[in-house]
Image (cartoon, rainbow, N blue to C red):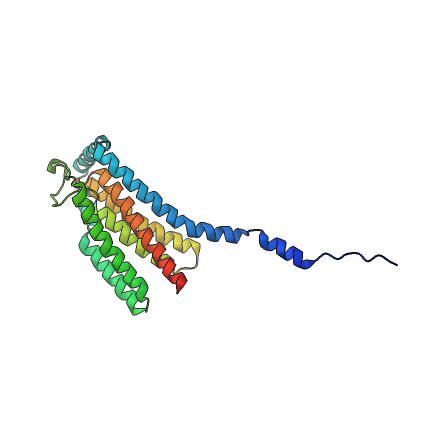
Length: 238
């Protein structure tokens, strides 16, 4: 009798293929874990910055930045008006109006959960910033360094914290509506640039120490990422 050749089982190949993790699966895992890792890293950065500030480790750099800003303003007086305008972008009034407009639009397009999350994120973030200011109790730079006198405590910078929270949250929401990676990157980079300019203007005007702004950026960005993680989790369940 002729010996029959054993044919390979296609099912075995399929099973073997299923056991091998695909690149797409790795990509999904990275996308899931990366925001959480970034939020944890930013929170750790805020703790490190605040600890260095309390120990006096940032005093030398903070003072050097204020002196440099004072000299730059003296050399180029016209830049003061530009810095005031950039600082105004991160003011409580402007960010509140921007948030109210975004929440209203989200409600209009029937994205109520996202609207409520955005509103609660900004409100709770604002309360957290004021609580941190009261807890650290850091005094603002001396009036001799500043263009204008502003009330309140210094660390973390409210302008830097809330501009990071609002601009990055809105930037992420807008980027999520675009399908092309280039468009998403552009929107997120623009949100980051706005946050950067607001924080730098506060140091350049002499109303905040440099570590105030660094701490504000870290805190606001971490808060925004936590909100985005929560929004993603709720969207997945829905």
